[in-house]
Amino acid sequence: MLPSAVPEIQRTNLASTILQLKAMGINDLLSFEFMDPPPKDSMISAMEELHSLSALDDEGLLTKLGRRMTEFPLEPQLSKLLIQSVHLGCSDEAITIVSMLSIQNVFYRPKEKQTLADQKKAKFHQAEGDHLTLLAVYNAWKNNNFSSHWCYETSSKQGP
Image (tube, rainbow, N blue to C red):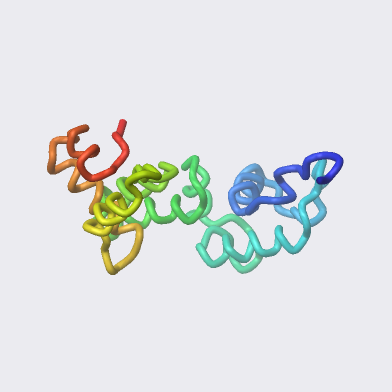
C-alpha cells in the first residue's frame, strides 16, 4: 500500500475537469500549476476525448457546444447526449437513460435468488445495448404506475 493516497486528479478521467478549466479561461493546461499535477498523457487523452466530442476545436479552445456542455453537472459524453437529444427529438428518452445511469445498479440480486433475479432481468434485455435495456426497465415501471410491488416482482430497486 502506498504511504499516502494518490490524489484523485492523478487517477481519474480528466475530461470534466479540463472542460471546466477551459470554461474558466485556462487554456494552457499543460503548463498550468496543479497542486498535484496529473500525468500529461492523461491530460492529452482527455483533451482528445473532448475534441472528439466537439467540445474543443482543433486548437484546443472551447467551442460553443463545449461551453454548453459545462452547464451540466455530468460527464461530457452525457452532457453532449442531452444537448443533441433536443435536435434528434428524443430528450425524454435521453433524460431517462442518463438518470438511470446515475443509479449504481437498477436490479436487486440477492445471493439466495441470483438465478431467478437473472431470469427476471433477462426479460428486459434489448439487443441494441444496455442503455436501451435501462430505458425498457424504466418504461415498464412507468407503465405499471411506478409500483413498488412491480419492483419486487421484477427484482428491480424502487425508484425515487
